[in-house]
Image 1 (tube, rainbow, N blue to C red):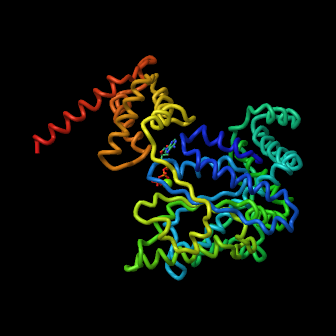
Image 2: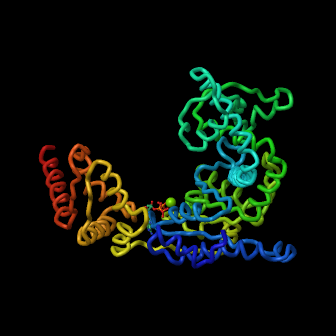
Image 3: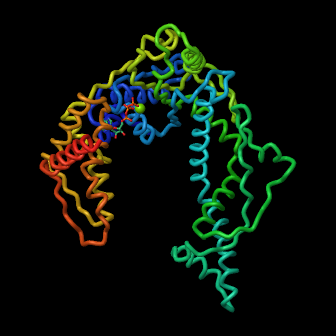
Amino acid sequence: MNFTPKEIVAQLDKYIVGQTKAKKAVAVALRNRYRRSMLPPEERSEITPKNIVMSGPTGVGKTEIARRLAKLVGCPFVKVEATKYTEVGYVGRDVESMVRDLVEVAVRMVKDNKKKEVENKVLPIVENKIVDALFQNRRVTMVDVNRDALFEELHSGKCEDETIEVVVLEAPKPMMSLGGSEINLGSMFDGLNPPKHKKKKMTVRHAREVLLQEESDKIIDMDNVNEEAITLAEEHGIIFIDEIDKIIGKSQATNSADVSREGVQRDILPIVEGSTVPTKYGNVKTDFILFIAAGAFHVANMEDMIPELQGRFPIRVNLESLTKEDFKKILSTPKNAVTVQYSNLLKVDNINLVFTDDALDEIAEMAERENETNEDLGARRLHTIMEQVLEDISYNATGEHPMLDINIDRNYVVNVFKDKKKNYDLKKYVL
Ligand SMILES: Nc1ncnc2c1ncn2[C@@H]1O[C@H](COP(=O)(O)OP(=O)(O)OP(=O)(O)O)[C@@H](O)[C@H]1O
Ligand SMILES: [Mg+2]
């Protein structure tokens, strides 16, 4: 996935309104990974990624950028919450687990790729097994069954939902977690207990999936996969650390919670700085992993971070508060805009929602007002408002009526809230 910075920004633009600075920073960082990978090894080893920290009020798109990025980039990507970690020695997840998670993703990616590569080789074996099973099914009722005909039937897709009995490997034993590091009980005893085969009933569709997995596992060399995955994670991995501000204790640590937060920061430091983390697939060097951190930094400032860690995030971008105009765009333009989501949902119940432009204006204005007078929720405010605007329709739509067009205009929105006010006032009197 070698998008140019402009292409990356254009992709992000489909979902995220504004925040150009943050999008650009992320896009450049991504492109730099690619540029670096094109250099000769001796030059490459000198260049470490410039980690990014995004700050900005709540609900303006920090996490959303990460989410969209994850789908976009063809490299191993994990998004973790800084608040999930505890200092080494305490019960909870240690920070190294973020690297283990990244490798896990890389292994899956490499495996999937390999699986695609060998699919042509193993598909005939798998289809043979399925046809064998179909043969058994047909033999119960028919005298002569033609295998060739069965192959044809299989390819036509007519028997995808037919239940067949196939021999499959028994599912691996569940993972057990021992002091943070996962141990696969199954693989521990692999040498002692050869994998067991078992007859199982399943649909043709499911059987194909399971058997493809089994057969490709047989020919894919796992040592190679692990090695490739580790290199992929080391060279192209991205770790997004969300809510980083929550592990920053304000000023001097006074209570134990602050002390423990500082501990997490210190634990994160070597990982961001470059160290070696042991995983069950092998050792992973973190020097070239790209870290993107984000946080609202309401209470704690970036400057409250321990200096060593600050230094490891040289690129800082501030996401701006969203304006009324942004809200209006967020309501209607992104591919997954809230209005689109509600329209799609209600279409199921035969309601065709149409939002007029002035309705969007009204909702956007209301969001801005509410954010100013009450708590600032950013774009999340739009969701709460929309939910209320459509409350009645959502509740009453049943799908038992013919398609209804409902026009949501400014009046509709204003009326909804007029009534709400009334209810609210009434409640005051009842009390
Ligand atoms: N710039 C934006 N463009 C489009 N949608 C947005 C934007 N900002 C926020 N949203 C919407 O608001 C929701 C919340 O945003 P997001 O999760 O990114 O907040 P955040 O900046 O991470 O806030 P927090 O600091 O509370 O974690 C998103 O799911 C998205 O629907
Ligand atoms: Mg967030």
